[in-house]
Amino acid sequence: MIDIRPFGSLGGADHGWLKARHHFSFAHYNDPARMNWGRLRVWNDDEIAPGTGFDPHPHRDMEIITYVREGAITHKDNMGNEGRTEAGDVQIMSAGTGVVHAEYNLEPETTKIFQIWIIPDRRGAKPNWGAKQFPKAAREAGFEVLASGRPQDAGNGALPLNVNGAVLATTLKAGQTLVQALGADRAAYLVPAKGAVTVNGAKLGARDGAGIVDEPEIRITAEEDAELVLVEVAKE
Image (cartoon, rainbow, N blue to C red; front, side, top):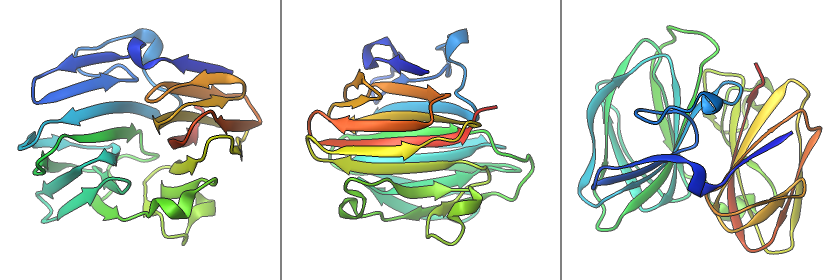
């Protein structure tokens, strides 16, 4: 089963400084058919104007992953963490028992991010934040694990998550095909940050979403040069 969600069908909001599109119900966008995909709860496609951002606000009991598509995002939290994450790189925040953080675009151009929320396996974990550079050259024609709490990814250098799930990314040249196995108890959600692909025969354009479940594998063929982000989580 593949659930294709064209970019134009996504929920959204335009706050002037923030242009947001929502793959799942979020804030004032509520669609009962788009509440989650397995343990994946939120996938926001955000464009943040220069010199603006999210003022300090709280989170708890959520795994929050930020994939920077263009520009950079600057983070600061009440645990004393500060950092700047650039395009192609990733930051994670395990909110756990509670954290207050702010995210700003301090760059001269618009910053574009995917913000992904995954429901953790256990509540009340110790909060944590981290960021890491992931050179895109290392992920050509093969998924690189960026953040994970899956047992098989222990010690592979991915940022840690408090959930049996993972965030992966790849780049494909036009004409390249990549096959990714998917367990019977797993669900996947795929979004091209750039480019166009076919996924198990279904067409997917830039910033469209594809929810995939009950498929033994994910077969991706690039119709043009593409950059893709994939989340894999428990189906239930």
